[in-house]
Structures are given as C-alpha cells and as structure tokens.
Image (tube, rainbow, N blue to C red; front, top):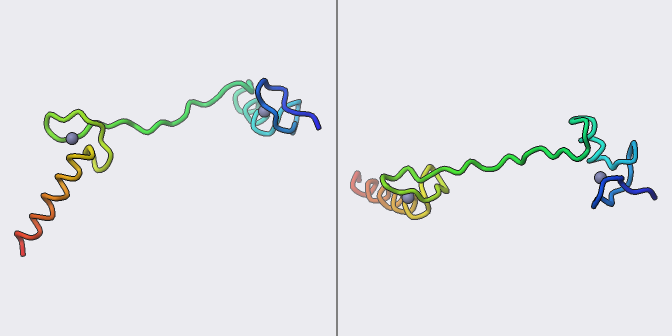
Length: 80
Ligand SMILES: [Zn+2]
Ligand SMILES: [Zn+2]
C-alpha cells in the first residue's frame, strides 16, 4: 500500500499521494506542511496581590487558590 508523500509520515495515501490528514491540510492551506498553531492555554498570572505565580483555577495559583478556599470556608462558618 502506498504511504503518504510527506516526510516522516507513513499513513496510507488517501488522495494526491497524501494521507487524509495531509490531504486535508493541502485543501485547507494549499500546503500539506502547514500546521495550524496549536491553541495553547492562555497563561494567566495569579490575581493575588504581589503574586506572579501561574494561575491554575479561578485566576489563582495553587497556593492562593487553597488559601482562598480556606478563607471562604471560614467565612461560611462565621455566618452560621
Ligand atoms: Zn501524511
Ligand atoms: Zn498566587
């Protein structure tokens, strides 16, 4: 069986000497070697004052997310 004409690609040919993936790229971009830039997760800094750690959840870094959670818990206890 013929394989894709692109270097380092050994998938079976679908059309025009290209595998389905590279053929799709040819159709979309006019060039089978074009790779769409991967959508990377936006890196967000922690919103805590003076903290520049990478946020992991709700705009806070691991440490501050944890602190925030503990604070919220305490608040709930106070309300009761
Ligand atoms: Zn291919
Ligand atoms: Zn932080």
